[in-house]
View 1 (cartoon, helix red, strand yellow):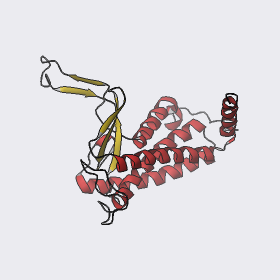
View 2 (cartoon, one colour):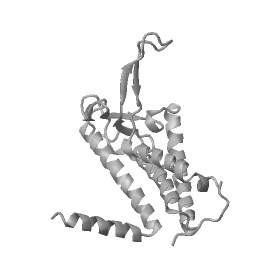
View 3 (tube, helix red, strand yellow):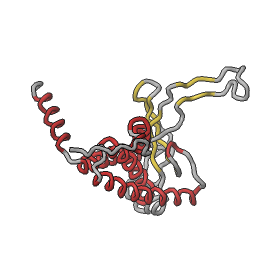
View 4 (cartoon, helix red, strand yellow):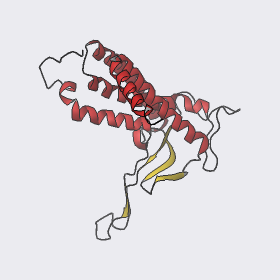
Amino acid sequence: MACYKPLFCTIARFYVMKMSLRSKVITLISSVIVVDQAVKIWIKLNMSLGQSFNVIGNWFVIHFTENYGMAFGLQFWGEFGKLFLSLFRIAAVILIGFYIASLIKKKMPTGLVLGISLIMAGAIGNIIDSAFYGLLFSESGYTLPATFLPPDGGYASFLHGRVVDMLYFPIINTTWPQWVPWVGGQSFVFFRPVFNIADSAITIGVFYLLLFQRKLLFHEEKKEVEPIE
């Protein structure tokens, strides 16, 4: 059986190399959305708000929380801000979709297109929460998980659902020394925000573009980009 694994990997790499750029974009976006939603739905149906369990030691924790606003649990002007942010995300995804199609047509480098596709995938993942979770799930409580398609209807209207977060990395969990002004004796946690896979895709996409595709993205390099063969 061991001999089939290298063969499978070779076939998989060959298949990916032969895929068109459009197919790679669709595969990447679809994969991120499926994994993101699968994890969120499992969390929603199996965990109560505030429930946690350790994955790796004390520094990688699954901690269920929800937020009304931006990535990493940030808030944005209450219900009005929530609606504005949802509409903004939908408009941004549409524009990014047209931009990606334009890049593919111009035969721009694969890395640039896939980096932007990661951002689009993450945005879509969080849009799904905002648009549909309020309609599909009951309210998540601090003692019981939510239910799917509750008889009395969901907990919120269209575009007013809450985004599910669960990834928590308190790598440093300590207390400020007493001699530190203003914060002495207070707890210090790094990294404190709780986020999800969609947030991760957006963050990875942004950092990848800034680190490796900056010249193309901001047109700092004037020479013509060679087309993809």
